[in-house]
Structures are given as structure tokens and as C-alpha cells.
Image 1 (cartoon, one colour):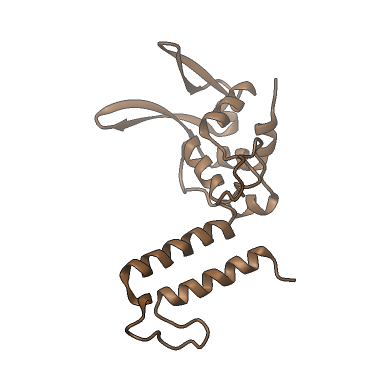
Image 2: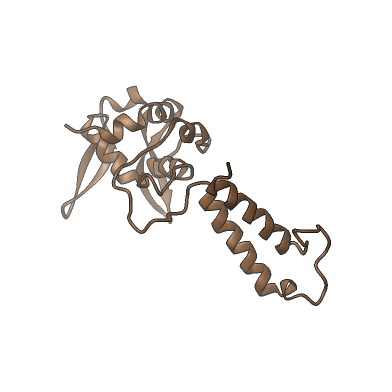
Amino acid sequence: MVTEKDKLIRAKEILQKMANGINPFNEEPIEGDSFLHDPRMIRCLFFVQEVLDRAINGQFRITSTKPNDFIITNEEKSKIELTPGKIGINEFAKCVNAVIDVNRSKKLTGKELNKQLNKMGILGEQVIGNGKYRTVTNEKSSDYGFEMEKRSYNGREYEMVLLNEKGKKFLLENLETIMKYSK
């Protein structure tokens, strides 16, 4: 049985050959005077390939309604490739969002993840003025693999909450529980 995903994969293969100057049906080079040699057409074909690739990987929303819940399958979790070394919560979310199906799940945000971890008592908040808060570590944070580190950007120093290897593992293993946690 041919699935929609199989059709998308086949369509991408055909476009890839055309963009590379190959007739997808007989595998011969496309004749020199063909409109398919026009750079504008080649760019268009590569763009459509990228869109199909995102759809194949579940990263392209096909429906007009956004999902309300964060949902991740075990198969998706197994595909997550986290950036080496200590990373921030937004970088963690970016790595997760690279594998989830956005037609089924809302994207993960660092803000939402911080909010949930704060509710659980794993992270804390500090008032910085004007009704604004920033996420900070607390006495429990290091037990879960979270630490604060001074960083510098454009000559301005700030402290950032980072995940070490223990923190990455904790978040990966408990992601669904964390996102569904309510006090």
C-alpha cells in the first residue's frame, strides 16, 4: 500500500533529478534548450524539494489549525540530536522541534518548558523589575542537571541557565511528564 509519505518521497526524488538536469523517467540528461535549465526554475525546484522534505519529516503544517498540546512519540524522541556540551533551554527546544510532527503537536518553547520546570520546583524565578522575571536555578536545580553560567554578548554580561549532560538526559526522559505537569 502506497502511503501519502511514499508519494511525497517519490515526488521529491523526481524534482531532485529535474533540478539536477536529469530526466526522471529515462535517466538521460535534459536537453540544453529546456526551460528546466533556467536558473529561476532550478531554484524553484530546489525550494519545492525543501518543502517536501519538511513535509516528509513532519515539520510542515498541512492543516490551518495549530495543535494545542505538545505530543512526542518514542520514535521522534529517539531521533533527537542534542547539541554537544552545555546548552540552554531554547537550544534544547530547537532540537526537539526538529523532529516533532507539527501537524499533531504544538512546538516546544523554552519559555513554556521553563514555566513547567518552575512549577515543579526544579527552576526558580527572579524579579528583575518592571514586572519582568528571569529564570534562575535554585537549591534543587543541580540535582536535575541545571546550572547557571556567566556569559557575555556585545560586551554585556548576563547569567544563563544551562543544561549539562545530566540535565539533557532528565529532560529527554521526562519531557511528556514535564509538559503535562500541573500544580
